[in-house]
Length: 162
Length: 268
Image (cartoon, rainbow over all chains, first blue to last red; front, top):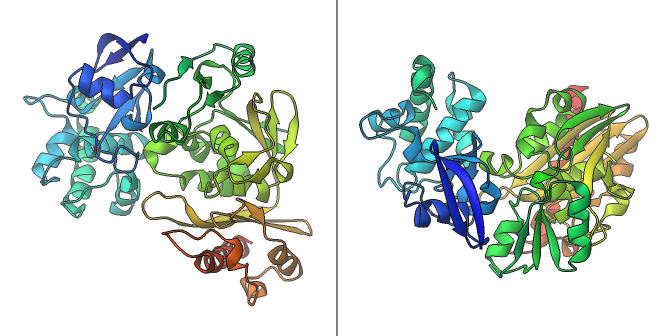
């Protein structure tokens, strides 16, 4: 067992864990932040995407001990039911989901795309950037639209961005 | 996962001490292969020595005629680094093709090279550009480094510090990715320098990355895709699995090489 201290969604967290604990297990099982999903558990699907020190990573492929001292942001940390993040609002507005299972990962990946490519995204860029996030319902069309719109909304509301 | 002890040493000496003292220890870099391997219980190291806390292992610098990339440099950072894009754009493009964005935010060049997966991308660039693998004790030419499937010249307790790529010539990398994993079904890194050509094939060979000497000889005389007509790799020496037969991979390697040559000619 090892004790780690990290910052999750702006709040300090200390946990004593088996070193084999994955970051996604710490988030879901210990911290009860179940917005981060486990889809494939093999780093293909992206449902577990969170931000680790500001970068999108697959939480099923990071040990929790590797996040010791780091800042982690999950989908619960980007907005609230009352005040959705512009990217979340864009997914709602453009119906960028059907069953919703992949959506938390899509939101976190989408925000990371904006971080790296800026607000003016074209469709080809978004589609290429989503190669690590799998959706089995939508056919991606509205997800791509939502991320492009969310990027514009984030630029228009810089204070609301992550 | 099998049980292990986790360490995050604060300097290189401590890391070296830990791997030397524990025969079954493994170094952890970005973990994008190793953690999946641990989850599947395909590896059971006694100790994991995380290099994340060792300073000075990440970053790109230009030293004379070489581009030096620290072992812990993430794929995303290699792809984005202006120094790499300017000096060796083919290397930046290769890094951009590894896995997916989240994997590129974690995975490192040192981890990829040390693992020597037969379908990984970086080994092709190392062979194609005649890179030097710099470790805590010596410098190893890429041609002497990759020994076979997941096998390298590294001693069990040897730590890669950086990879040095000679700058110069023209290069291109073309790969046909597996649509699910993004690993190369076949990838070809072609380099053309003053009177010399190198062709390194990954994803296809049963013994891992290799130089395709027949293609190099043909291209040395006539650097055009047409020079490769009639040349074929031996399908029986290629990987055959559920994703494709040996003959299919042999064919793909040829197609990727032609595309890489065409791109270099087009840059010309």
